[in-house]
Image (cartoon, rainbow, N blue to C red; front, side, top):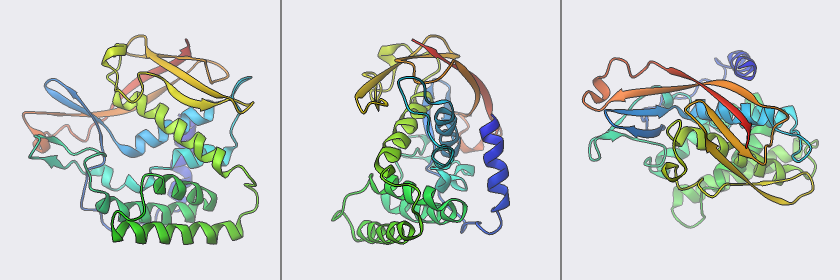
Length: 273
């Protein structure tokens, strides 16, 4: 919660100078089907949770990250912050659009504007997040993708000329950002209290991490109840908890549901497995 307040303050200092162009699309959400309701997590809230995970990370097995990397992780989905306010309905599937259903061509302008905002806040954050976004893409698929990849390569080369303090840590920082991103997605994509066979298939066999010694480690997670997640090996200095926002929309009402904008604050505790 402290990290969330720090980010809101830092972001407010740059809000006017970093205001993006108006976003029309809202296929940004992380969706769960819960019977009469769809429960969803806004992309930027997921990003903030990944930053909280990073802020608590580290013990005798795993390296404690630097503050700049924690803040970069928390803001890595800044590109979605305006689109998060819009709930777009997928009439073909009769459900909200989610972050996987948005065509990549529609994501690229959002990625680029978000990276522009991030660069104004934190140049190293823009460098790292640019590598993160580009890892989703492959050259030769489409001209717009190729153009985006080239423009982001140019951005990173320009930023590297002015940044000297990251040394050789860029690849390991990217690996950790993606690790904390996945741990946050475990929370977002699974129903609270889900049994192992009900979990999203991405995470049933654990999530890859790297120890202080450079050894590959798999972290296995499990919902013990609707509020508690166990991790083995445990990557934090101690057990900790946070309040995490979700929203829901009634299937029968869709975008006409007046409660769609309301957030349900869920308490989550992370403990050793």
